[in-house]
Image 1 (cartoon, rainbow, N blue to C red):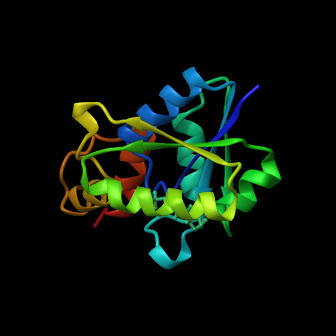
Image 2 (image 1 turned 120 degrees about the horizontal axis):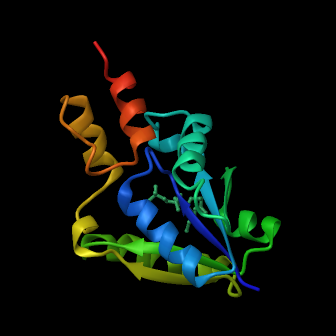
Length: 159
Ligand code: PNS
């Protein structure tokens, strides 16, 4: 029985995140989407709202649950009994940052495994920050995010 974490800030969750979570849910017995408080990133959406949107977007996946966390990922993994972390890897620009986080997480807890899933081409360049920018400029984000996120972004940037 493998319990995996898919961590992120999810500000907001995109179709790329959802693709990684879905693929992870097909590989693992149980997936917990760990929504980081990430206070230093000064998120656009509150932690509560980000969790709510991830819950709505993953409601159709029976082995996926969603939990907020603050503090270290390795501590949260221990707390919920997760053996592994699954992350998406997009264009090569992701690599250095992910490589650093993985190396440090291994130093903090050598038993917590990190597994990467490559993003398919259509999500290679998709990010929450690009989605926030498009939405703030009143662009159409429907191809990039689940419907509940589109609605929340429209509300956020309404005049
Ligand atoms: O979606 P993001 O912002 O790229 O996700 C980054 C996240 C939340 C996975 C990462 O910042 C994290 O694990 N934060 C928790 C704090 C922590 O454990 N930091 C040390 C990592 S080496």
